[in-house]
Image (tube, rainbow, N blue to C red; front, side, top):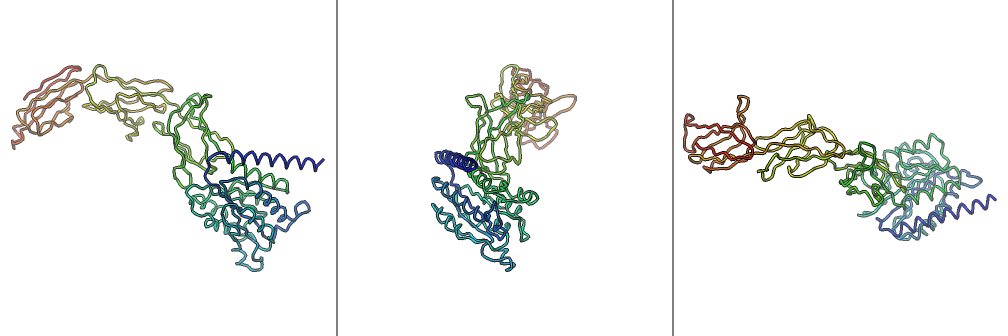
Length: 460
């Protein structure tokens, strides 16, 4: 019965792996390059259910090579450590790591041949071996570089595998490694979790299962659903650009417009098996989430609070301005994050904002509240027209007169003696001095009033 169950389990694993391979081969993918970093240190001579671990690992890894052969857009390589120099040879054993089978198409049989002739004699220079892998991946513009580290022991040469793995990811050499720990104690296993995606294997059967799981994760599409949540916690917000950055390299990885699909759900996004992303959703103002861990080979959901409403500005009458703009700032902030066209309705994250509408003079409207799925309307007075006639060209300014104070508003062109200006309702003064007059006492001024929807002629 046990033998029958084992055969059934093997058949199911093979079928599952074949299904993943078939699905993978039907889609356009970057070239996937898997480097197997294999432990051939002396401890691999230890027993696993009556068989040496080295024999179990090499046999099952050789079987895996046969399963990978149907995949056209994949290359594999093999680096081995602990197989050239004995522990007694000191420093040489701590640099005992060699790329035995470099990447190239259809080298599966070469890897099987090499695995068949390994004999463990050395120590465990994991950090050194990981560091050497940066030279194992030839340059490639569209490749997904993956390391699968197989070990039955901890670092024995004083290196820091975690730091090395992190440096490889930051420099864009590889993605987060997969680590298969063969019968490791809990304390040692925990130390490997910072290196990569850790999987424990306590016997031959679990080692085989882990290999299958990792390969399926590598080959299957990793997808993400981004839920932009409204104030009720529902993923209803959409139609906004969002950018995924690599958390380590800070490079742009993906750029999408968020979409609700035909089923009414946020649409899924296919992602390569990268480890961590920074996501920026380009709402106004933007919302973001850093260090997002993506679980490979499954559907992931990322949720961000992004409740939004609308801002619309209207003129109480006819708008004489040709291209009126509004500066939008968060309430109490002096930083401009958006300039809105007066004639457009624009979406913002819910909250309080201060507006500076670039009329003449500027119209300030503070503490405007944007509510969920609601359009907030801001009304400003209709302007009037000031038509200015000067004795001749010269230096002329328009000042707003309010609360017994004058505020500069506008300079009339020094090359004209007539100009029409759109102004908001209020009391003003025109101050003028002829171009060729060099005495201050000949300055002239005239008070005038602008009324909404009316034209006012001002003559000196």
